[in-house]
Amino acid sequence: MAAVTTRKRAAPEGALFPEAAGKKRARFQFGSIYNYEKLEVLGSGSYGTVVKARDLRTGETVAVKWIRRGGDGATDLRAVHREASCLAACGGHPSVVQIRDVAADEATGDVFIVMEFVGSSLHRLVARARPSGFSEAQARGCMRQLLRGAERMHGAGVVHRDIKPDNILVGEDGAFKICDLGMAAPVNPVGVPYEEDRVCTLWYARRSW
Image (tube, rainbow, N blue to C red; front, top):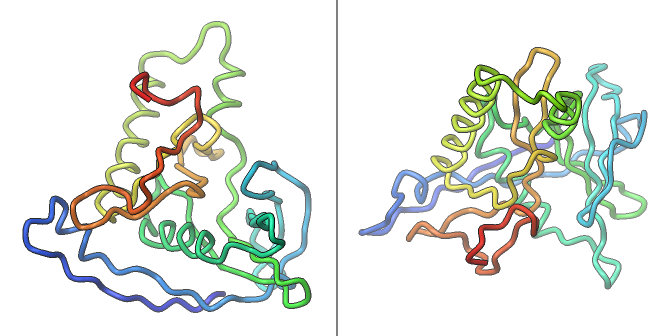
């Protein structure tokens, strides 16, 4: 597993979210991707590819996200660290996907984020529920879990910035988990993300954008 150290930052006077500004930020030492056996590709997007894999040390089934290289052929280590740090900051909450490791391929320099494996997504669940859709009780149960997950993220000083059905996983036990923090960002001491760009999936953006 990746070794993790933390650094705590002080909350300045007048901070809107002093409890978030004082949170510890994780620092990682990369493990080896050769500790994992690839099973199947789960999906691919602009930021990388996610595969289902097996941890050869423990036998656990995990999801491994390969971070796509930039136009210059280099991996954006800052983006990797940001996503892994945001996941680690929310560690332990049942409504946020859990990080297991940060790994690298010593031969190629590729970098990977290893997370718990969760079988399905809200997008698939909604598609299967058509045409009747969710019952009110099901919708309430889903939203209750997601709001608790978002509350944990915001309390940890993390803003997701791309909540949508594809980025919500659903376990066999019915647990909903927020995932894919590739666009997430920590908030600065005045309560807004460090990155100024407005990022999200177009179809889920508010109208004023």
